Image (cartoon, rainbow, N blue to C red; front, side):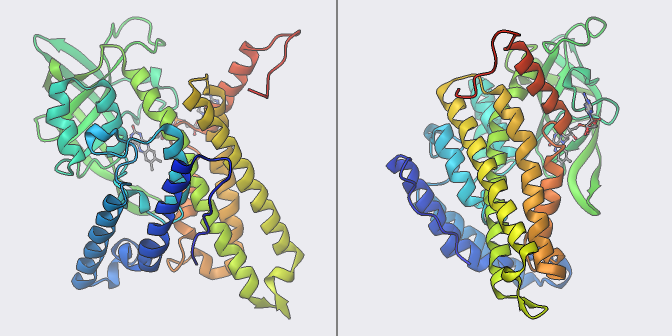
Length: 417
Ligand SMILES: Cc1cc2nc3c(=O)[nH]c(=O)nc-3n(C[C@H](O)[C@H](O)[C@H](O)COP(=O)(O)OP(=O)(O)OC[C@H]3O[C@@H](n4cnc5c(N)ncnc54)[C@H](O)[C@@H]3O)c2cc1C
């Protein structure tokens, strides 16, 4: 089935063109080849070497078409080989490309490299850009972001324990991290460290600094890729044992690590939500298509009221999630304070995504949980999103705090802005 993307009257010609070009690649190049492109991931046992070669060839050819269409690396400015999209343009592009599973990587957006690229663009010195950013963009290097720890709460980054201590011209890093994605392939990691006054006020957010750490130096011990959802993964457990790097590897000002992480995650949350909407859109189309064609108990599924309820509830979930996310993206683009909205979408959208995919699986029956359809992968992804990048509870607390701080007994909240 093709994704239906027509011009949206309220959007500019440039955004409509980006969406149309993206949809053309999704519909003409990716969806017809989807099983082959990702075959080795989905069905590793039965895939032959020639299948793998063919998958590589198709991926390379799609990437070339993406570049020709001027859509490569939408998250990067033009001077770094990206499309130079505005925040909103990028958000609108994401919902279209995410309709096809894994398509982001074919458009040059591969987490965590893409987040690290954006952080290096914003905080890197000219030397750091030369040494780490450019090879990362050119695909000659891989990277990871190493913040979460087994022994402290990732949902409260102020509690992180990994330290970096100044010794002459070097930082000496000691700590224990896990869930460092892409850790097995990474050439360098951006590591969140406690650099200020380790015995002082641990609750401050200004004690963290991000430091670039190559993975091939003494003391970087990559213990294992964690088993996630029953599968081996490259989300790694890493022990940093007296790791020494030059002070020049410090990213941004000392103590700016928390702010840099917020910069990374704030924009990332909107992109993740637009991706989730693209995937819900796909799950919805799959569900409706199955309801139209599957006959059970003497009638098509579409004639059953339970299934009609699934379709209606999913439509409502997707529209609510989409409009909420676009509203948030518009606020961010205008420079308004969008923190409440970012937290609101971070809670609402993954939960809506999970509900929509759950219904689509139900309508498809047993087929819904097989690798023949993208629904099982989407379901696990949606569940994971409810805790990654800040769990639901933390964002709900932030929403309530912001609302209570900006209202009083006399003045309420302004939902118009
Ligand atoms: C697939 C995957 C990839 C990841 N990739 C990376 C990566 O590349 N780099 C990286 O650094 N991290 C990564 N993470 C880690 C992720 O960001 C953390 O798991 C997340 O921030 C939560 O931290 P935690 O696991 O330490 O949970 P904790 O902080 O221990 O929280 C556990 C639970 O406590 C509850 N909770 C927390 N605070 C409150 C509260 N105030 N009130 C009530 N309940 C509360 C929530 O339900 C929460 O889920 C990844 C995680 C996953 C699953």
